[in-house]
Amino acid sequence: MKTWRSEFVHNYKDAYSFGYCLYAQAETRDALADVYAQGYCPYSNAANVQDVFYMCRSLRVRLAGWQMNSENRRVYRLYDGTFTTETQPVTVLADNTALQAMFLRYFAEVHGPEVMPRARLLHVLKHGAARDVTLYRNANGQLVACVLNAGDETIDGYWFAAYVPEYYKKSLGMWLMIDGVVRAQAAGREFIYLGTAYGEKAKYKVDFNQLEWWAGNSWRHDAKNRAVKDLMKHDADKSVGHASRWQKKAEGFGGLTD
Image (cartoon, rainbow, N blue to C red; front, side):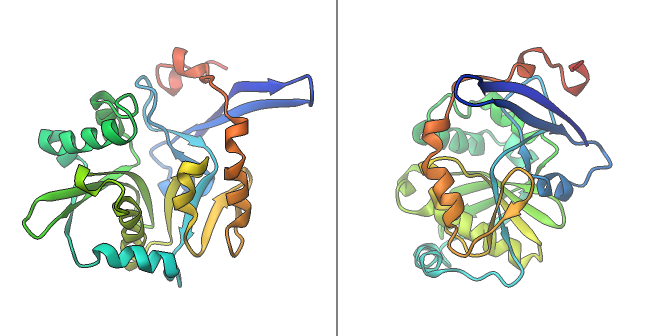
């Protein structure tokens, strides 16, 4: 795995604090489980790079002995047994325009059209971390939801999920994540990675037993997830609107000279 740092922001006036973002590019011999274990998540926000990962405050659930908490059980009962599921390769999402339309409509209506345009979705599906998709259908066989999974044979990564409009604000998004944890445990995975943990909008991700969060050098854990919740509470005060400079000049990792 090749790694590099990109200079970001600094605070020279009040404290000697100088920020650098950490990135990595997986090589053919790298196991995705090892990349994720070092605090990296798959990066998909620059069209001119591929198979890049970024270090962040990410989350994972340790699956050995994991059990739902009371809130997980309450949400899971809402749709337990309601859907049939099937797992398909990512090419299904890349080739099926109707499935793409559902995916893109969800992001456009819930998160804004700039978050997941079609070009970015197709770019995501080419990332080496993208493994397969889980499709959820109702009793009439109609497609209700699609989850894009990352990972390998030992770990799962819950990457992106989309579902039809009638389930907006009806806890289906949380249910899909819980179901992802259930399915990963049943498959014998060691961990399932849940993505980043920043701000109030990501609070739903920290409502799991046996949750661990990446603290920059190691994975941390506390019984009630209080430490990571406290960090997320203050994230709005630390947000800055700058992009990493390497994105504008890089033609993949080989284009980087520093």
